[in-house]
Length: 400
Ligand code: ARG
Image (cartoon, rainbow, N blue to C red; front, side, top):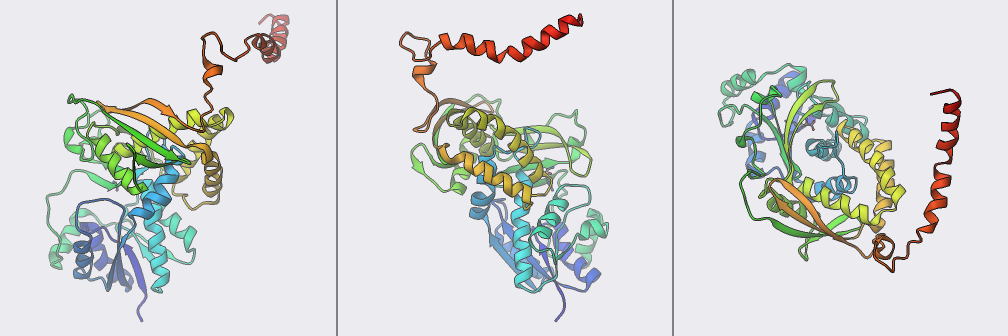
């Protein structure tokens, strides 16, 4: 039997042409695998069929929406994960789930390699290959677009010559990657970081500058996971979809950033992640109410490290898994409700409450009857400032 390679197949021009290229360059049979991570758009059955029409020996579609939401997005939410404080890791989160299915399918079908359609300039190639390596170290990864230096023009030419059933749509000036956590848009006129984004770029969010009456939503969390909106229970994927609708309608979650890629390039990125931004905003505030102070502070550093690891393709690394254990432990009491006001591109917390709240009204109130004993503050500050005082006296001796 001929050797097999499992290709992560999107249905687009590059990976469609990639099927033939892989066959010609490696002599392997190509199994196409399309993964549904809530990217929307084309029907998955049409994509499955197209891979066969382009020469795949087998074509599989995997609905990974629930898995993606449960096992990837919820951990990211518990971690308030943002790369460079602003990017909720839209593409970075989808790569490990796709890579996992590539690797598992390859093993199940006796293939000895996997393939993806990434170029050599981005983070995604690293994420795919590092994830596959961590799951199935015996597999090799092939990247036809990168390794055979295939350009878009060559792809179009190849598709025409071999009569591949690919819609010759006009070339989009942008490179777009999307899933249920958001959209990433790059290239075209955006490559000049001085150029402002235009309305055309966005599909998950409405123009935040159009005036609309605000929408209020109450999100209920249990142990760090959102479980209901306005009293109606939902699964994680449903919560994310629902929040995309509600927050997207107010233009929440648009991000315009110059980003430091793993490969060393700075790139200008436009993202939209309405559910991501709204949910992280709500979750983080519930943590402010329920996490013990030092845990809350320390967790910020863990979040930053976690986001960088995931951005850099190390989802399946030992360190990231260890940080997950820490984060999970912190979420035990992150249960309660947050009220968000959605308007004008912003998700603003206007209320929070929890059975597990560490906010003590009697301690916090400035009214008479408060239980905080202010007389304790004086001595506390004496001791707190003691090291500074001693050091300052030495500095005085040295006349500084
Ligand atoms: N720069 C972003 C990231 O590394 C987005 C990548 C989007 N991929 C794409 N093919 N447009 O996560």
